[in-house]
Length: 399
Image (cartoon, rainbow, N blue to C red; front, side):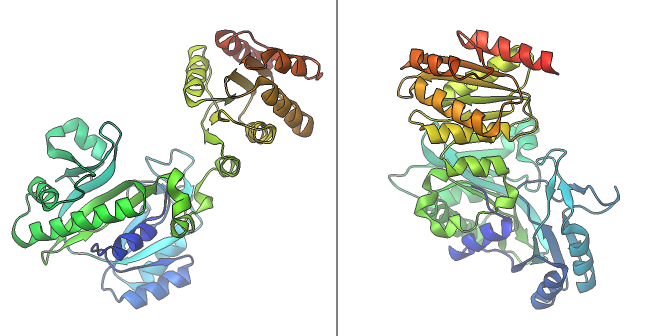
């Protein structure tokens, strides 16, 4: 689960991290009021969307030479004018894709006199099963570009959970950023604060870009991007309350209500599969035969008829879907349960696109019998290769 910058900074502030003063705003009048409260003389007006690259982004509805989604202004009037331009408009960044995201909230923040910019992030290292730090002197840039062009400027290390965070980790960060004296001490304190926030809140990723040194010699978290382990959200109702559903795909929200693993993609063939590995293989073979999957959808090993029905409805609700492939290998999952769910869903919402069903495993004959006797216009497939070829062909013929 992702949250907005201002929410991330509020959490980090709870742990003592140095963040600039700022106030969220949902209307131009609220932005103006926030500017008066902060006092200036410099303000930063920041679009709040779940995507990076906001400063370099462009608004669809504004002229090409208009400023981006992060603006430094020097008057209260300019704060309000920027808010009027940004709110309700669609910001397109390198991470949003061409569709962009509508800006529904802003963060009005006091300006900072910046001397140096750094990059610092934390994430879960899947290889070591530890929390890892990624640090670079190249703040303000896309870390992917730094990794490609100057990988030697990136320092990474992980923290042993048996010892937890130690002073040596703070010293590693200070050394990587060429900090000494009081700034090194500030770095050591910050590393401890960030680690506590990361582990206490079950974060999956914390990115600060940039982490800055101000002209008066202070480390400051100038931006913050945080995502949480969705499997641990139940432990943190205060985090769950921060969820902004307007930033998420409506189909993904609906899928989460039924504990379905669903991710919307850009293709035309909807997939309903049990098991993440089989789902990945299904998407790969669809691409092999010249088409693109419209989604990743894993109904899980213990899906019920109701969950299968919900999954099918979610797929058919996507106007981009021109064909559906149901690919089930029943181990724990029973093929007759899948068949029941598909039949129930089709009877409720109808079937306007080609449907290929491949069933194998537990109760496979019962499942095939249910579908064959249902009267539905279903194309049966013997194996995954056969199923992929049939759905791709059916979609092309129906186009």
